[in-house]
Amino acid sequence: MTAGSSPAAAPAPAAPAPAADVRRAGRWLFRAGVVFLCAWVLVPIYLLMVNALSAPADVTGFPKRLVPGFDPGSLAFFLRFQGVAEALWNSVQVAAVTMVLSIGIGAPAGYALSRFDFPGKGMFRLLVIMTRAFPLPLLALPLAVLFIRTGLDDSIVGLALVHTTLALPFAVLITFSLFSGIPVELEEAAWTLGCTRLQAVLRVVMPLALPGIAASAVFAFVISWNEVFAAAVLTIQNRTLTAFLLQSLDVSPLPLKFAGGAALVIPALVFIFAVRRYLFAMWGIANR
Image (cartoon, rainbow, N blue to C red; front, side, top):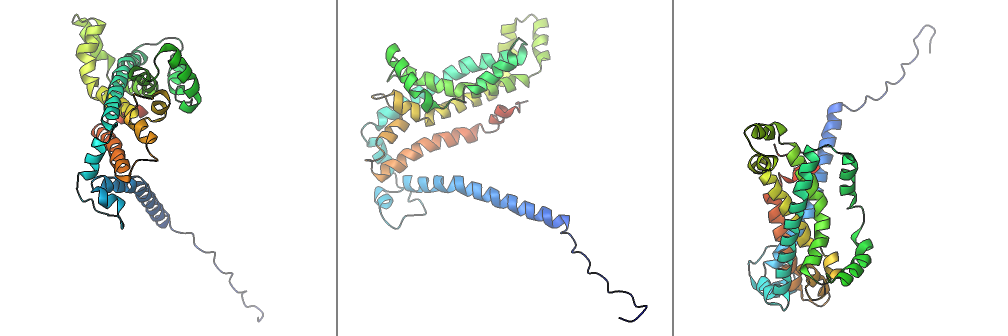
């Protein structure tokens, strides 16, 4: 280096990645996560439906089909299997009683939470949610002993009471959000026109909240329809479809398993998609 010459310039630091590239990578990561979750949920359901809508020979054969044969043989075999019809009818009865009890208790509780201020209101809401904090297997033995002593074991009513306990927190929270989204001024206007509080609720509030209440009822029906642990522990002769399939899982043929799985999944999917926009009320988004 000669005198007076300037020293060599230091290398410039690497430029940071542009913000646009970071956002683009984030979007691709988000899309990949969505695709993965959709595949995780939809692929098993698709394979279940393919086998349920195929002939028994195709279900037990190899290679497996990727397109349903639209043969009702597996479903017909499932419906003719001994005990399936009784178990299916038991599931319908238990789910219907659970739905009625959940709405009959949950809707008044949700209305009271949305319209009245009383000591311990916040604690009551917390206790409603805390009922789901206790796992059902932990309560199985005390429930079985209690039901045997009271004569509710192996009965439709006894199992429906347990399912109502599972569905009631959701019914209370959904109806609370629904009634909170209906202005109280509408009821006050009905009072000024001569309606009592009960008449105002029946004539003004209920028609506005009816779609959401119906969604809550369907949600309770689905919870009862798919519940298996309490049904397996508390019933012997009057088993629901889920408990019946669990009992015969090791010895039943493949067509029965796939058709039974479809019989459990299809009603739940239909009900959930039919009322999906009302179920957001469970998270505090009222149906306005």
